[in-house]
Length: 156
Image 1 (cartoon, rainbow, N blue to C red):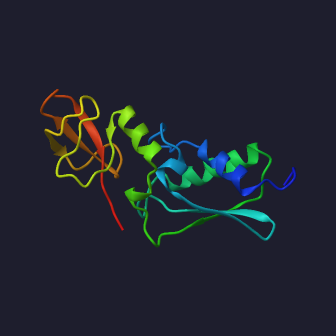
Image 2: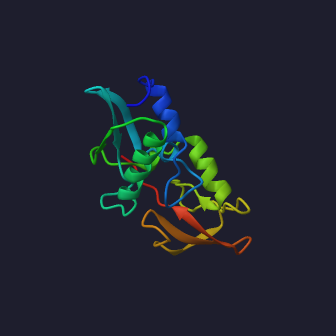
């Protein structure tokens, strides 16, 4: 480390500024994949959980974390990937849900239909369970006729 040891809260603030590589309007913290930040052996240890096993963005996420910490003068760091318990959409923060909606992606919901992020209608239909990333699908609003992506719901 090149500076005095930062507080854990400082590390969380750095992580809060790192966007998800696949959905850049939401941070890694808001997405809920940053599990813990702690100090071990005089260095930060950051535990992450990918949105699903085999997430193609996992390597990029780790690189982004290392770069952000290095840019802040913090390093070396340890990054641990935790697969258990598995990540769940329940870990997305309320601010993250709002950002998804504002970006045009319906946030995860256990409702029988997805709410259109354009007009707010619940009269929607799934067009495809597969979207631009494995964690999203495509729906269409029957009210405003706009297509939109929806974040697939997962729960623990």
